Length: 175
Length: 131
Image 1 (tube, each protein chain N blue to C red):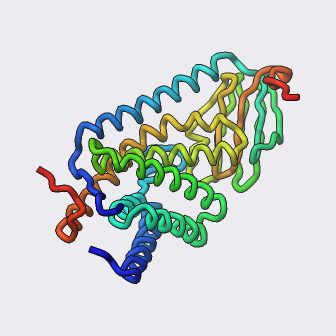
Image 2: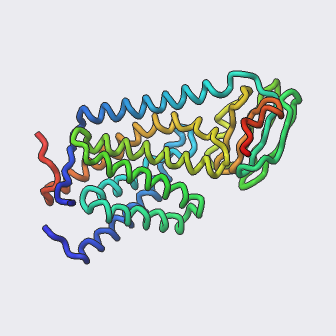
Image 3: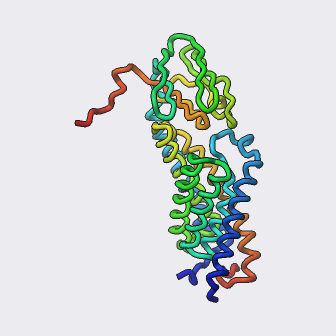
């Protein structure tokens, strides 16, 4: 099932805009009221990243990620936001690329690893920005939270993939 | 190469391994971090803004300081402890962090790019010299 170039391009564009809308919408979810930690997000845009990774392949997924980060910083977030989202995103993407090949790990696991890697990337940027290694003190909290947010985005991905499964043969049949 | 993309949709053993790995990593980092810091009482409060030292306060003297950058943090030193008591930043995480007193502990206000760190004696600041 070879897709045409236009098809691929349009799909990429749709996914980018979806990711942008999702990352904007999740600002209205008051997650910080439950967990008072800086930079806590559900990471809904990760659903799109995962989708792109599985359905379009690594190259397109990377393109979508980078364009999403750049556009996201144009619409709000600024340069520092770009550094945070870009590093976090690239970390998450790389880790997910590696682990999606593992047979024993489902969408949940890949999504959790992505969320954890995203937080590690962001902490690294925070270390550079603050000029201090003490920011690492936040990492344990962020990692624990990423297990839960990763599960949440994982289950969303599962729902999305289930629906898309009827249209593709790419997803392994479940028992 | 994209043809072999297959993914499991149901929760499986590997996921449990992933979760325990992430939690273990968190605990490990936490333990190492807390062991390295905060075990001894510090005596100097240092205020960093965007990585640069802008102010030094004594922990022994009770004071109140306003730190202005993108937002304003109100810092107070009392009973050999330091806390950010008021802030107009969006998350207010710095205020929720509470009071600290141990050497090496820090309060961070990321929106304001401010870090308040407790340090020991001035001469202990140099860890090593690179020639």
